[in-house]
Amino acid sequence: MSAQANARPIIIKRKKVVGGGGHHGGAWKVAYADFVTAMMAFFMLMWLLNATTEQQRKGIADYFSPTIPVNRVSGGGNGAFGGESIFSEMTLPKEGTGSTAKHAARDDKASGASDKADNGEAAESEEQRFRDLDAQMQGMGGESLVMENARRHIVTRITDEGLVIELFDLEDVRLFDEKTAAPTQILKDLSAMIAGTVTAVTNKIAVGAHVRANPIVLAESPVWDLSARRATEMRKLLEHSGVPAERIRRVTGHADRAPVVTDPMARRNNRLEIILLRNVPRN
Image 1: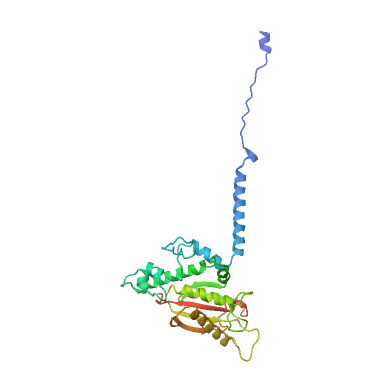
Image 2 (image 1 turned 90 degrees about the horizontal axis):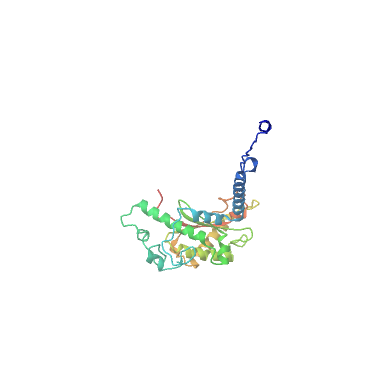
C-alpha cells in the first residue's frame, strides 16, 4: 500500500503545433510580388511613351479603338490594306469598298446606301471613308525604309472641313530648301504617296502652306510670298503624281499667321496641309 501511495502521477503533455503562424506566413510575399509587377509595368509604359513618336502612339490607339473599321475584304496580306492596294483602279469600285479618280462611283453606291438615303446618312458614309483613309495613312511605313522615314513628317486629323494631311519639317530633314520653294526629295516622295492615297476617294482638295516667322523685322516680309509659292509647288507635285487638276479647289499661302507651337520661329511651323474637303457638310 505504501509503494502505491508514493508512486508519482504520470502527466502527458501534448503540444499543438500551428504551421505558418505569425511573421513566418507567406501572404505578404504575394502582395509584394504583385506590387513589384505593377511597378515594372508602369515604368515600361513610361518608357514606351517616351520612345515612340506622336504618329506611332496614335496608330496604336486607333488599333485598339472600336471605332476603327475592320477591312471587309482580305486578300491574305498583312499590310495596312488587308491584301489590297490603294493604287488599284479596278478592285475598290468592284468590291464596293470605295472608288477611284478614274472609276468614280456615286457616294450612295460606294457606301451601299440607297438612292433615298438622307443627308445624314451620306455624311456618316463620308465620315467612315475619312476614317478608313486616316487609318491607312497611319498604317504606312512598314513597306520600305523610304516610307518609314516619310511617315515621320505626317500627322492626320479629321475636322469639320475634312481630312487634313499635315506635312511638316523636322530639325534634320526639311520639305523645302531653306527660304525657297524648291522641294526636297522627301517632299517628292511624300507627294507621290499622298497622291496614290487620295485616289481612293473623289473629294475636292485644298492645299495650304505655312512658314515660320522671321527672327527680325524686315522692311518687306517674305512670308506671304514664300508660303504662297510653296503651296503652289505642292499643287504641282500632286498633279504631277496623278491628281487631276480639276480636283484642286484652292491653293492658299497662310504665311506665319497660324503657328502650331509656342515659338513662332520654330521649324515645326514650316508645314503643308492637304485637305480632302467634305462633299456633305456635317450637321
